[in-house]
Amino acid sequence: MPYNIAMVSDFFFPQPGGIESHIYQLSTKLIDQGHKVIVITHAYEGRTGVRYLTNGLKVYHVPFLVMFRSATFPTVFSFFPIFRNIVLREAIEIVHGHGTMSSFTHEAILHARTMGLRAVFTDHSLFGFADAGSILTNKLLKFTLSDVDHVICVSHTCKENTVLRASLDPLMVSVIPNAVVAENFRPLSHPGYTADGTAQALGQNNPIPQQVLGPNDTITIVVISRLFYNKGTDLLIAAIPRIIALHPNVRFIIAGSGPKAIDLEQMLERNVLQDRVEMLGPVRHEEVRDVMVRGHIYLHPSLTEAFGTVIVEAASCGLYVVCTQVGGIPEVLPAHMTVFAKPEEDDLVAATGKAIAALRANKVRTEKFHDQVKMMYSWYDVAQRTERVYDGISGALSEADFYGFDAANASSWSASRGRAGVQSFALIDRLKRYYGCGIWAGKLFCLCVVIDYLLFILLEFVAPRENIDISRNWPKKMVNGEKNGEKNGREPSREMRRDTT
Image (cartoon, rainbow, N blue to C red; front, side, top):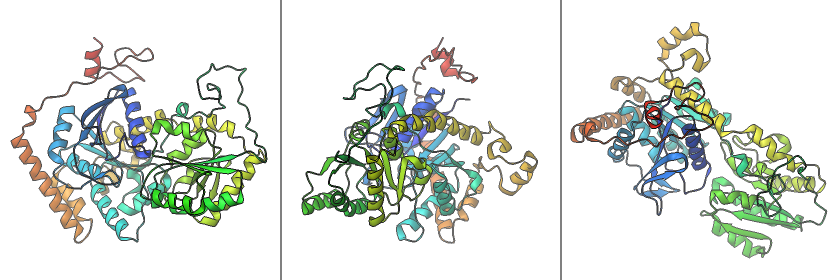
């Protein structure tokens, strides 16, 4: 059945990044499946109010103060009036938040549960347990996920991390990886592109040529990343001079911006490497492919990573990937596409040297990577698996089908926990869940929920929902012989039937 879904996060286009791309691609594919999807994010420079993107995806840019790394200032309650207005205007049924560090995500899930809406959270990050920042972040995550219907993680490592951080039942967490639009990340040598990247006709007589590198040919190493500490920029700064000293015919192309950019530039000046390292600064997501196809190796020195979509994009472009063996990265690509290194300077230099030697000896068939990646990842598959989560929390799937346990155990499961994917909206039940979050934190969380509920009652009185105009849906298009919105056996919604009459 079709759903009305609101994707909520501080991180969205025009800012480039993995979360931003994930939200956009997932939303467009869900729209193709017949669902209504909107995105709620904060205002970016030049983008405020309501914008429409491809496929009728509506984006609400809310003008809130941005604090750090595109995250808004957390206010807990001030977002509620705007959020309620948007949700009622769009007749939203499911609120899907993305990103642990997004204030909008945490506040939206709290308000959604107060309004009696289903809520899903997708975690894209890994966090520790020892430092003060991680402890506070984990407690905030525990607050949000105590009253959420289901959690999605982008890798199995991410799932283990989230289950431990938020004390969740593993059955309430699904693993749905990121994906890549392989057609947008074709190598120059792939059929469909000429040497200058322009399109050409496909045909069986146009095979993929094997790239042959001589001993004196220049090898280009590409790095595309936000220049922050957790992305391994310090490790990169230490490794570049050593890699260049060991391999005279190697050059770097670095794209990205961040607070560590000044340290990187100072390293280049100190070692006089401006002619061997090209700094491009920030690039838009649609320009990433054009940067990648200029290289032979993609270097990813991240210190922590839940998935790493960029390395899938690099492999799709025909680059041999050198990456640190941290987080969920080992789950992303098969061994023949990658060279792993410990997150240490010496090991990263050695792994890069190993990749350079393999390319010069023609031991790696990078020209096959694109077609292999295309078979591994699909946003259509991600959308179908996410849709199944929506079916599970809405009751369209039985507990046994959704959670995978024997139907005979369903009664004992419900008696001990309640329906795991369908949390009760009753205020007393919500308070019980929050109260168990800690001796002091539990009481504070309960106070927040009570205030949020009272604010909801006040808004219902001050701004009655019957006075809020319902927004018209974007007209549905007919694709692949669809008739009256029928697709994959799904009945058309009322809006779809009206639009096609």
